[in-house]
Image: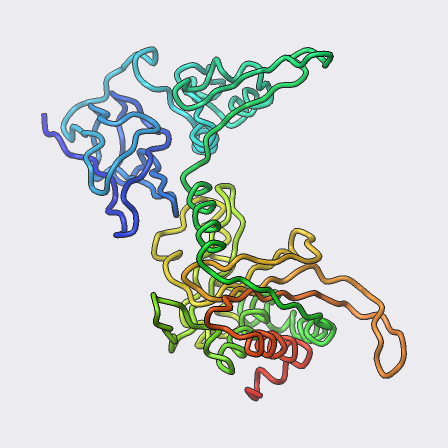
Length: 393
């Protein structure tokens, strides 16, 4: 026997521990080198733990849902053993990746479920069937982590018609909640609004779309315009790109723009490093890459660390207006909303234009209303006359 340790990946200094999700292999299974054994969830990202070598999984030291530290040993591989059969009644059943993620999110015990997939594997459909029947979820869930209680109501329909399910927050959701409360309690947040005529930007995008896609292999979206306009304004008003450290103001000589992205695990904000040095094509490619990584849960810690300013486009979901919350330790955030045809007055005439309401929330401790308003106006002017971006005016 030649045993090899399987360890949790090294965590960043700001992350104390992590949670194991669902083991993809059971004891006795053969594994190939770099085959994913389990996913590890922190309050920022989900990381994969690959097999360091080919062999047989002979010991699992930390079960599904366990809390682990960076570089902790969680299993052992025998690199010389042959695969052996181990009863699924003893060891955890194997779940398909999508199913494993759902079970981890809802803390459902795989050993209490019947898998309909090949070899008894639990499929996403199996888990969805359980979730669609909340009155029976207690039979599948870990009782230490989930309480599914049906409360009968006096003079109300029977409890089976009014189910309730209590599920603890994921680490990411809990961390997002913590940071939002921190932002509201430590920043003096104000929000300024302005309306933007999107017609010039949309016309340029439409005119250049075909040539842009042919040249760069990616569609010309809206985010590259928003990021470019934001950087344009931050250069004019550097305090909007600054942050507070105690009683000091840190002025950043670089522009790392956070892009708020929705994912199955919740809101994440990957960072466009040195956005001022990126072309439109660079931005579009990176945004598309971040979107794919967020949906698959494969964003790395480095993707989410830092940032000097954030752009959040709630318009993709149809939002008309909102007051975005600052992402600490940043001092400002730009909220973009849905573009709608509206009646506006131009030169004394009522005309229809595609309008968008922009919002900039800012920390009034270091950013005065003048800088915030003028910064948002600079963004507005850059989008209403995109040539300003070319001539830096």
